[in-house]
Image 1 (cartoon, rainbow, N blue to C red):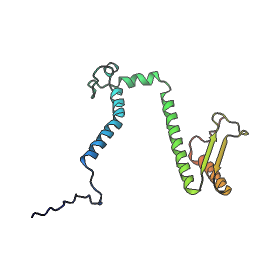
Image 2 (image 1 turned 135 degrees about the horizontal axis):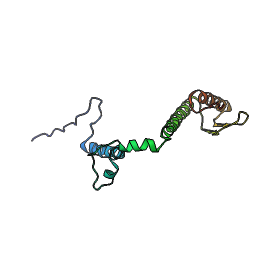
Image 3 (image 1 turned 90 degrees about the horizontal axis):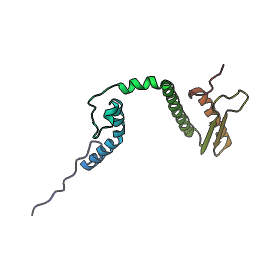
Image 4 (image 1 turned 90 degrees about the vertical axis):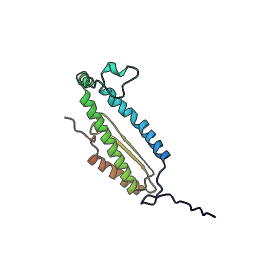
Length: 163
């Protein structure tokens, strides 16, 4: 009578089971679907306008060109201002997220609301509303004070003097 011996599957050095082929196929398909829009963006940026509308489209540009960029900069005179504005907003949002995450770690804040006026604000007018909900008022006051001090120090859009 022959004995059957169950073969143990190979495990990685960390002790975890290695993923099967189906997992890899799914991951590759998801990666292609996720990255395709970025690929298409770059391909059409370097493809002449008439070549972008032909059917079927070229997946690799045959006549790559910088003509689209040479038309963009003279026509969009405010392009660099728009790019700077996008950079300032993205850095500010990132800074605020870091501040709120740090505040959440330091105090038991249940909710925080921050409203800041935009545009030209006179010195005598209120420009900021900070509201914190916490189990104790001392924690709420301390968190609000810290947030205002850190905003003044970290966030690049805070109080630009007007002459």
